[in-house]
Length: 114
Length: 113
Image 1 (cartoon, chains in turn red, brown):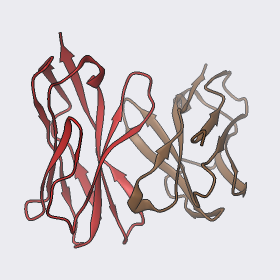
Image 2 (image 1 turned 60 degrees about the horizontal axis):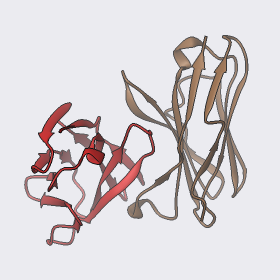
Image 3 (image 1 turned 45 degrees about the horizontal axis):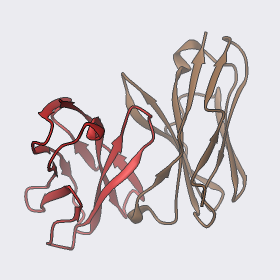
């Protein structure tokens, strides 16, 4: 079965600095999709960024970018110029056709230090 | 579009009572998902529907939990009887296609006392 592992339960970063959240996954599929979701204290789950496995180019959304290493099955999220509003739980997630449902990691809680 | 709409936002009930959580998915989304989130267990998929048909209910914890989707615009998750260990945030999400990601509702925080 596909699994998603986020090895950092919590992280902290100074405001305006850059932080990278790690995610690894296990799959035997060659075609799949990866996501990062943000859950701020309001508890709303928000899709931050999406990556298609067949695309070599790393996805970016403003200050958010990913480092997708398909061979290593690694999908890290980089947040540049961290802002107080970035404080949240971040979930890495995987979708493949075999399961036909998104599998979530356990999350990384990110603290932004003023 | 108003997004995925869940009600109520908060629910406090006594042990043994029936609880019904409601969800209206985004129009045109043919898949609907119910999740439970707790500190201990994280996000758990309880059940999901495709075109109103339950596809996978293996995450439903026990027979006290049931879910229905009578039409494309409405779903319920019912707990009867409720127990304190059911206290959690319950999310509904919908999607036109899994590879595009899910859109989540704002969740229902359930407290069973």
